[in-house]
Image 1 (spheres, rainbow, N blue to C red):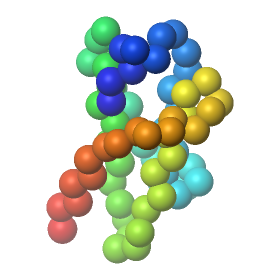
Image 2 (cartoon, rainbow, N blue to C red; image 1 turned 120 degrees about the vertical axis):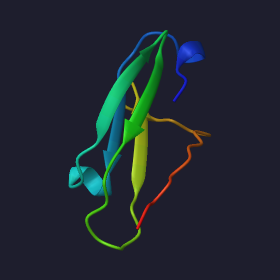
Image 3 (cartoon, rainbow, N blue to C red; image 1 turned 90 degrees about the horizontal axis):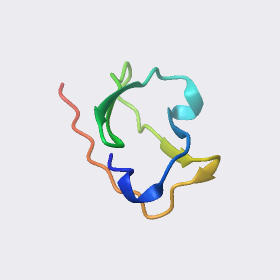
Length: 66
């Protein structure tokens, strides 16, 4: 995720309402890599918030390996 143009703030990523652990690693310069490991073969709801606000227009890529 690239938050360069967002300015300073808090990035929050939750999966299925926080029931699935998310690993977020800083790549420096306000860029981040987020990942999670699904435990069940069900749809997963990924929410991204910045400073408590939904990150509208946020796009991301999900890769699921079986």
